[in-house]
Length: 307
Image 1 (cartoon, rainbow, N blue to C red):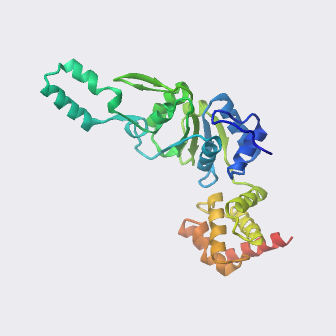
Image 2 (image 1 turned 120 degrees about the horizontal axis):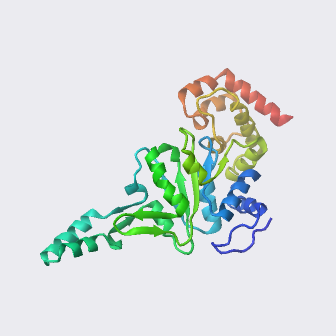
Image 3 (image 1 turned 135 degrees about the vertical axis):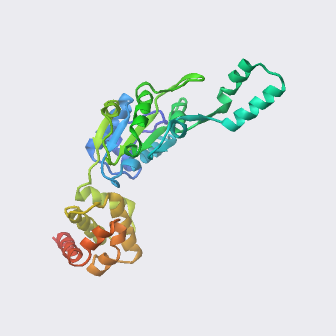
């Protein structure tokens, strides 16, 4: 389906256009995800994506930004993230210099305080950058929100519901137009209902075999067709094994690329054993799969491909 010519402010007009827009950016989405994205764009609501690591949550925001011609503003979350790192902070060295210069000129203290808490001393961090995006607001990616603390979630409520940040020294800064917001979580802890209530929610699951094969064909075109099919069949069966961390789509793509770099044409147990570190990220998982389990999964993947 051909995409209509559009400016960065023109959004997809249907779910089918949303699917086509994502596909044009190399993102093979299921229809339910495209529906959630379409509604988030249409309703100007944040899109909250939850799911296992490596299933394409972060990539969605990147593709949307590229496809719509918007800037991407990324807030990478971590434990201890605070307002100074996420929203704004004051340039204290410049403020101190301004105070010394003003005092040397015998400037009145109220005038000094007025000057140092002005826009020229304000340092914008990702949230404020996104809100001040102007007529063509960016895509704001709040990545891995589950890594932060609950107080930061509370701080986000004003941003997500009112599209504004309150700065005590100068007042409220409100967005001219709301940014497109994508929030991701790997569900290492539960996010508060107050945040989710302000968003449209979608659980991003592992893809089925056909969609994962389509993704591998798109993202690892150098992989031979037979190898791609066997890689996907192997990974699909591997996800039924009781592992500490199941491989995501990102690992499937990396594995297909690694096997192609080794000039593999089909899966064989020795090559699988030698490259499990590309697919699995914990030694206990590798030890559990290596050997007879790898041989069994390889045989099943090759049989499924031959069927």
